[in-house]
Length: 452
Image (tube, rainbow, N blue to C red):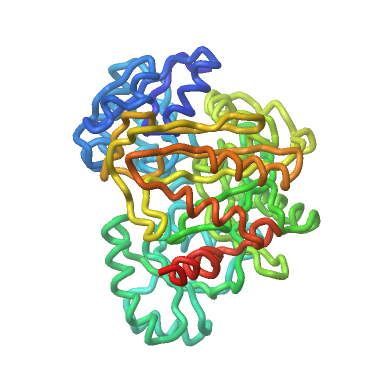
């Protein structure tokens, strides 16, 4: 096992990795921007290095400074967390070249899954169902229009290198497609340096369900059940739970098998997630693969009793998985909500100083936070300030614990999305366990309009 690792990330995920390092007796090294100098994760790490000014391209994406911090600190490995450089194959390659272990899959696998178009081709080869669409990048509106005519509307216009909903749009007609193409292509070029666009058939009433896997370097692949992540705003997840209340045991088994087949086909190692769209008849289709730890990994930990960060470190150190698929039991139900510093009516960020921050306690309550009273929420980074995770013997118990915890969550000085979360998790559709990716558009936003 490693004696010291550098965490190439910030906020709650940096704290999460530090916590496991302390448990295992591993020294942790944090990197931080000037804006994060007083942050909790910086204080909790054994060492910390400033890597630049607040904008991410001058700090958390500054590969030279992060590599220098790792070398100067004597770290043996780098944990990338999620977001930022976590799925950057160039960074993973650079770590390898510098003699640092990248805690994740090999660079070539990251690169192959980073392109949604290439990932579609690869998954089809692996025998995993994919959504009807095209597997070549669209150069212009004319090509897009011709492809759309063959597939048929409605369609999802997507950026091949996209993530977080950027460069993605539902189009119902040629007029909408022509209007959306240039703008989404430009956004993809700006955010990802790659403007390649493609089209997929739109799945009606879709559920977003993903399978967590762990794979070691000895050929062992274990699926750790699934997570339902259908409640999203702006194509970004807000509420996640495990297991999914929607799918049957038969569908569940088929999805787990498909995820293992996908990982085996590409020679995957470490933690990863195969994401699927599932229609109302429970047909499932490959959506994308995330070659990193997910924001919502705590709900999997809660129902399995595993520490996924610890398992990541063990795999990266060359150890075999200590359990089989049959040995990973599913216990109870877990739900996670993301607490954002944002206006619940507009979803716009709400930066500022947090003057009061009090977290609810109780059985089955877990917190993953990046802030405290007195923390400054800056406009430079994602506005997520915390994750509230609950566990219950049953889904009903987990829902009740979540409601009570949200009602007793205290944040002052900034706006948060807690009112939106409360409306969501008390809605009859959520309580019934039937929520699609259109939940916010169908049930939450109309409430805002009716109260104006």
